[in-house]
Image (cartoon, rainbow, N blue to C red; front, top):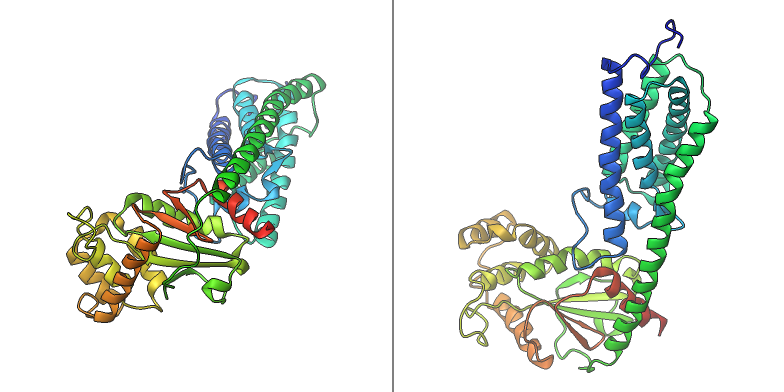
Length: 382
């Protein structure tokens, strides 16, 4: 060991080495989250299973980058590389070896360059930044900078250590590739089953009532769109909230062929005469607020679902003023919109919310987004 050379790891658990250890540990945690998110998105077990922790808005979104072709190599999530880099950093912090410091220094530089390339691809090609990926980029560049500023050892790969590292990376990569292939085959088989079952559902025909309220419009008449979706929903229904959050993801890529109308179906006997008792005491009033303005409907729809746990008569009055509206509860036109939606439920023998009518066929409850997209794709292929 050359005592004149500056080192990160060859002087024991110094302050520099502790910083390296903490940065490497953080890289493992961030990469583990991204790996878990990758599998949750590609192979969901239920609606809304994937974490929304790092989906801040349309631009700062983990989902867009995770679902892109740049997120994996042959089914192996690139976040595995992040776990690997963090792991060799932890090993390097505890094992005093000149060859290990040289190897880790070189790999940290390569990793930092890769992060910069991925950042450019994400921001320019995908037009979306994954916040957790960005955090990993910062950690990686910090590790590379630490080596650049505080380590005098040259860049090289120790042959024996390189073989160990290759094995350390190849084994989990092989397992992940096999898992991805197996799950992909299962997903495709299940998707075919959903399509077959969907096609066997009763066709209720075109809606007798077309709602003026849209969750998405391509500018076509509802009946002219290739994919026509009617969503019956209740603002106080927790599962309806999940569906409202997931539908925009299901619609990605289908926007120009899609018309999605919203039907108010509050499970509240204040306005729904089919209800013997009220399951959701504020559902009718929430529906009246959303139906009060066609122009502001989507904004109000999203806001109410986002603040569903705050629903109360007082808050609905406050939100009415916040949106610059008045007399929503007393307005006959608003009440008529809600009643027309409730009446439309009779055509489809509606029994619960959420319910979607897709090209005349009824889906009660909800499907995981990936399988709903499979059905939408099959409708376009027809």
